[in-house]
Figure 1 (spheres, rainbow, N blue to C red):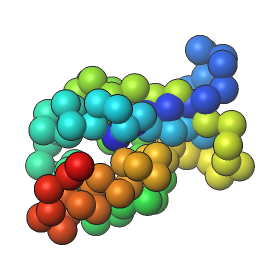
Figure 2 (figure 1 turned 90 degrees about the vertical axis):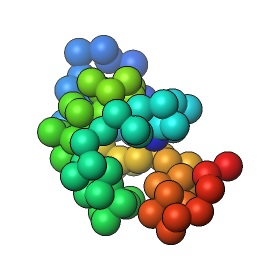
Figure 3 (figure 1 turned 60 degrees about the vertical axis):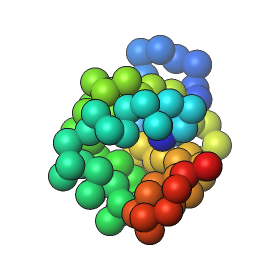
Length: 94
């Protein structure tokens, strides 16, 4: 998962528009609480609540502002959504 907020303003809060980076999902996913991983699998593709964004950041994920969407909230990248779907289906992520 990648946590990105693609606007260049570093003071921007993650409660605004954001995108999670996938590059390190394999590294920080195992560090999440089981309930958080379950929530992400059950709500894959939905806006990620601030408390889960904060947990991902503590586990090593990064959030950057996202100027590609007008939707409020922080979202996983398409690659992250695909990766989580693969994990949720008990398949081996590529």
